[in-house]
Image (cartoon, rainbow, N blue to C red):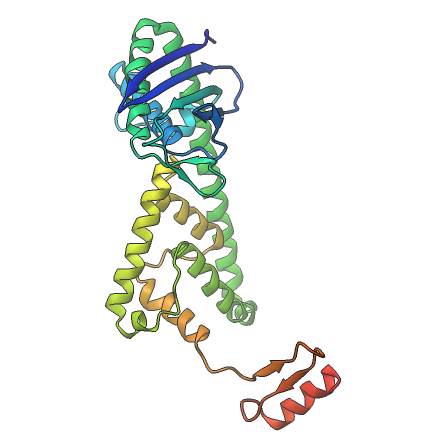
Length: 304
């Protein structure tokens, strides 16, 4: 579609070099480096590049009238068919990585540095190359239309599925199966509504439901912010789509509902208890946590 676009600049003592080219394919291919070392897990520099790219194209399309009203591109729309290299040179005193493999850049100042270089250079390129800009915008519009059509098709399919499910439920034949699925649905509800919740056995949190909700909201806020830094996807939209696929609502009172149930199950008194002996591999059952008839049945089946 066009020759390779090269952008470079120095911001916040960070040297930024970018190479971009849109092709007619549908694949996105972004490769990043820091001090000549490939960052396979991306990081702040890729996040800054993607966010700037999306903003520049949305601003340009709106200013030229190629998009109407509140219609905007998502990051995946403008990156369709893009091949890019993001390379930074960062002084040692600013260099930070996340994880032991050093595959993800964590330097906070890298993101705004890449955003500035991308924004300034790309704006100038689009203004000076209107024909190329129009081709990229048109390609992004087609990607946007395909994405929205796919979403609409999923919604229509879900409506049809829910309608069939409602009609079957009216017969009453599936009531027992629905009750059997209750515990599994509650587990999935926990995973969707609290995808990043942990420390559920801190007993002090569960003495006060208001405190539990405050803590749960704090955890989700932290992960929401981290999620938005590394991807263009919308946290709430993903939760809604998963919840729709699994056919249950987003729980606005997750702390009091699902988390309390999960805690009660995790901390309940065990039905039976045993001691495993490493020297001979035997198992000793304890009384009176388990009834004698059940104990005899277990002993018989484990060969004691």
